[in-house]
Image (cartoon, rainbow, N blue to C red; front, side):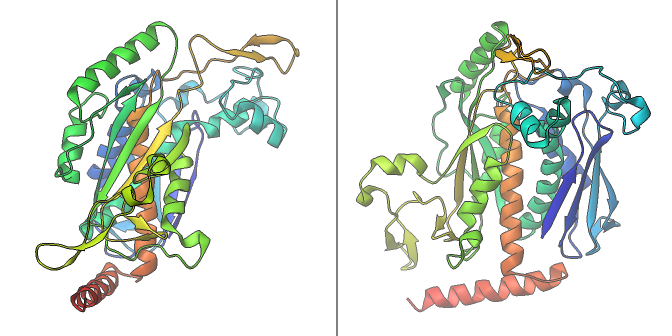
Amino acid sequence: MRFLTAGESHGPGLVGIIEGLPAGLTVEEEYINRQLARRQGGYGRGGRMSIERDHVKFLSGVRFGQTTGSPLALAIENRDWPNWQKVMSADPLDETDERKVACPRPGHADLAGGLKYLHHDLRNVLERASARETAMRVAVGSVAALLLCHFGIRSAAYVIALGGVTACPRQPEWSADTIREKAERSLVYCLDREAEKLMIEQIDEAGESGDTLGGVFEILVEGVPPGLGSHVHWDRRLDSRLAGALMSIPGIKGVEIGLGFTASGRPGSAVHDEIVLDENGKLARSANNAGGLEGGITNGQAIIVRAAMKPIPTLKKPVRSIDLGSGKPRDAAVERSDICAVPAASVVGEAVVAWELARSFLEKFSGDSLAEVELSWQSYMKLVKEYLGTV
């Protein structure tokens, strides 16, 4: 299973193509649109979110609400396109210097992309490098989440730190559905109401001073069967694929699984999850410090991953840069931007994690139809139960 996206921030829209989905999967447009709305939400978002009202449109691959097995094509319209038709036109007769960007913004892809592709108008870089592209990735990941949900695999994303404020840990007995419900009641998608108030205060202060804020979000996925991913090849290790997917989100600068960096400061005896027998005499774990992954393979416990997002590099109080046209110092270019997008990034993170899990799921339980996938999954889960029964 694979996907491609295309589209620019101020172009006509975004498109995505998913190949490899089994036939017979029920695809709920309402569910996908709900996730797109969550991505547009969160306290601290900027003016672009007041313009867009993202809705997905199926162009192919779905008939009467179910996948057909052919490529699934999706589209999301950019409602701001009418204001940019001249600037972003594909017609050479429309070429213009209007809204040309010659002063790169530190922290963005502007200068690095200009050097790579030898663009002198850095709008050719920033339009695709924009986080606007993640709207389509949320749509694609939502389709993957629907596949996972069919097999009882559910996820939830929530903010655990923002602007230097750290929330209290989630309650271990909370299910993914409970966590998502609580997060959606928060303006910053946080489970700690006291921390939420402080986070909002930090965002307000940053907005008043023309600054931006970053933070950390966590994703929990429950119901994951053991055996996804593999230790036999580096590129089949699921932990590396999850980390790579999260790092592909604009602004993400760090990823950890389970204890993550905390494990580096503890002795092994306080890190590794002991294998024990539960009250029913079945194999169990003393904890889940590994975050549900060992040797690049899921071990049957909940997956727990975290991602750290840097402050958005477009500031209303711009940082210093150099004008590539004149060669003189100048304030960096300013595009419409957010004060903080950590809550929105958590939704994108949940989507990319769902995609990688669904991809691994179909690698292990392959089939051209959902019925075939179900048979493969049921057969394996029966074998796992028998395996554990021999202990």
